[in-house]
Length: 175
Image 1 (cartoon, one colour):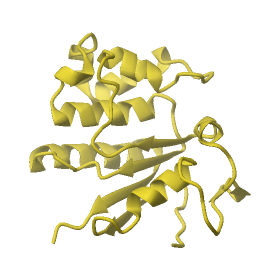
Image 2 (cartoon, rainbow, N blue to C red; image 1 turned 120 degrees about the horizontal axis):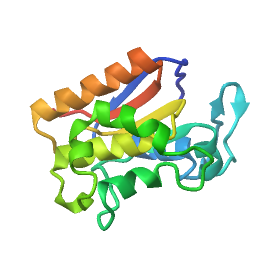
Image 3 (cartoon, rainbow, N blue to C red; image 1 turned 180 degrees about the vertical axis):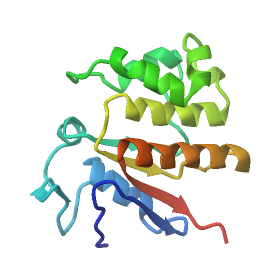
Image 4 (cartoon, helix red, strand yellow; image 1 turned 60 degrees about the horizontal axis):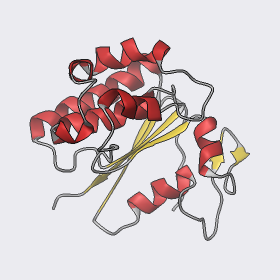
């Protein structure tokens, strides 16, 4: 696969189940070894850069099916978004709660008590608390009602418009 995502763009990879979309995102995040080729971020080859260093460079991933930390509260899940980094949660918290007001209401609740749509919001928020440069989003619509899917896509568009956030979005074809 070969593609280019310019700063400030939203690019979507669409394909059938098993086509390698998630594998592509995992390779970009440094979670999957690259067999051949190269991955560049701002002109720098990061192919062999480990995932934690890519995260420090501003690359964040929202995994499919939300993948929250179920035993942790909403707030603790958000703290995990800045774990091990110099970034602090507090400066980002008001902006996150403005984007996802339900997370403020449920900040002390366990992530397992959230609906699927709320867990998806939490997964996106956890990625955003570190102010990423590149957001990799894996099948954000999976398992969501159409109304919630539209709301999540609108939040992603808003993040792109207002914060100039670069987003690579993966979605499955539904034919």
